[in-house]
Length: 310
Image: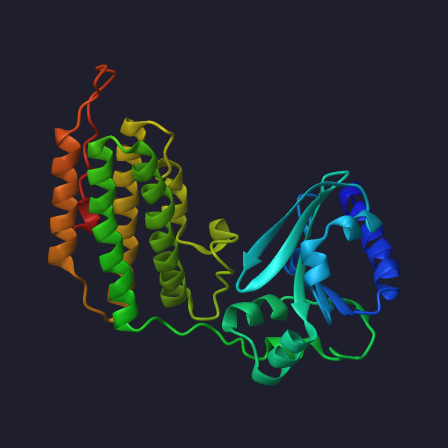
């Protein structure tokens, strides 16, 4: 076991000993990589610890309790899927995510089920640390809502495609205005989110619904189209206008390739005219841009080649 994992195991033992003495804490379990056998934890993994209590407010409003686990250097609150978490960086670089849920929330989850995303997390592994009331005798029950993902409806697919091409133009306009932060943020966040979604659908369409695409792009290098993965280095930009223009061009080219292939595989229509119009607008906006200090020439939107729109 590597030293970091040893440090986490010691922290877990300390946590269990402390939590046993806290009357309001009834259940605690580990999710994520430190509970998985598939893609298990390594020396860079954090610890995702779920704490179930009658009243979670003391653990959200106060910070003194975390001293019982080790020396904290940083702590803050974060909301994730409606659950409030206290994140802590302990001495030794041990980063722990304490997700807080009430007993009422747990009972609701057990009776009404959980969403597919939460079920996906539970199906990958749960490590119960303490269960004072036998609340979770079979953690797999919380994974029962998970099924292999269905393909998107044609409406869902077209929503993402139209959204992408609209925001490609939006990005170009903000770059022309000189709003580099906004342009880069849209290119490297909004447009990449649409690209990731289509990559997931593409993987399922080509390799079957059982293809594991994980959550929000995790391990994307393993499951996405290898040709796209090989070109992703050019799709992210430095904080430099010429670089953002070039990254926008590459992102558009990759999205065009994957979305067209996915539409064909699913038998869906494609807004070819709208995508073509958006690409031409971006090209014109790019050609009209120039560097004020003459460091170079504005980038040329790459030729569509084999991925040309019909």
